[in-house]
Length: 274
Ligand code: HPA
Image (cartoon, rainbow, N blue to C red):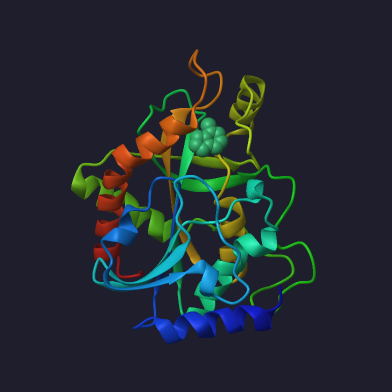
């Protein structure tokens, strides 16, 4: 989809929200809680927005919620698209570009992920320092959308170092223990095999999931700062001698989502760069 489609979608949303948002927030599986506490709320279902594609993933709603959070104007995606649903990557990153045109400067992303690092535990929060794109494709393939960024986009500082430092400071202030690591993005929808997880560990991955990488690439391309967190909802395949379950992922999300919400609220309140 081209620049005009993004402009049309942004124009539709702009008319239906109050203040210009500065921060975009993308909420992962079972992590929709932040959207509930946004003040002066304006809710826009994706289905209403021109050129938008709707999400079908479990634990996901499909709407933008704009308003104030941590004292700042935000727009939050309650529900995101996943590649495994069969969407084109260009559709998956479309909302990121819409948020860019709405005035967003930083993107905060959360996801549910499997723990690859054997030092991790279920329920841990991980600050994403970097990613490995294991999806076998890239959302920027195709004609370059030069209105947003360059053909060959630098990924050296995708997970903005200064925002990561702000996250660490907020975690310390709140006494929340925060892991750090590399997120490896797969397409899903099958979970990984134990052999794949061993391979990913060798490659330097600490957590594995089925999202975030396309949005982070699109954000980097259009010059958005990114701050991203994984909630370790399960240990990845083969780490523990038990099968993985979708219910566990959602349940841990519900149980530990509040802690992540507390952390993100503090970061938004404290960090002047946001
Ligand atoms: N693998 C991939 N995606 C995930 C996992 C996992 O173990 N847990 C939550 N999302």
